[in-house]
Amino acid sequence: MWNNKSLNLQYFTKKEFVMGKINVFNKMNPTFLLQLDELRGLVDEPLTVKSSYRDKKYNKKVGGSVESKHMESIAVDLHCDNGTLRGKIVHHALNLGMSVGVSGNFIHVDSRDKQILFTY
Image 1: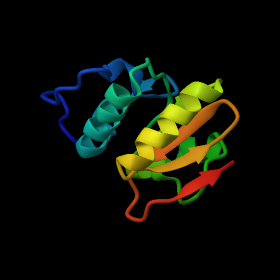
Image 2 (image 1 turned 90 degrees about the vertical axis):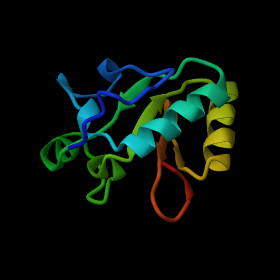
Image 3 (image 1 turned 135 degrees about the horizontal axis):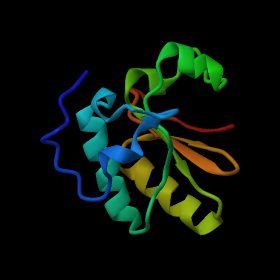
Image 4 (image 1 turned 120 degrees about the horizontal axis):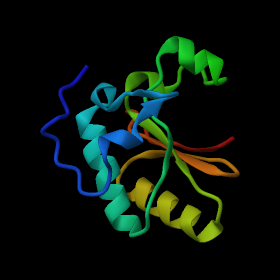
């Protein structure tokens, strides 16, 4: 667990990072959070976090991959239901070196070692 209290995010608040009803902001990797905040600035539109850190039990409950980057504290799913926003998120996330997964109503972004682009 990290102490993210002093982390200075411009666009996100700690309340946005939950697992079910449990706040998991301090379980998120601070370097990833700063990268996510930079992504939000580049996209220049509000981004809603649908999913962030997950423990193994919660990940299984929601049908996550056994290798989910959410369990490593370096991934979020962002709500996205229109093509323009989807394109902006994908473009800027890839330019930042993030990996991106595209789904019908969300975009997964993470900071794994080897960048990939995938669909669900």
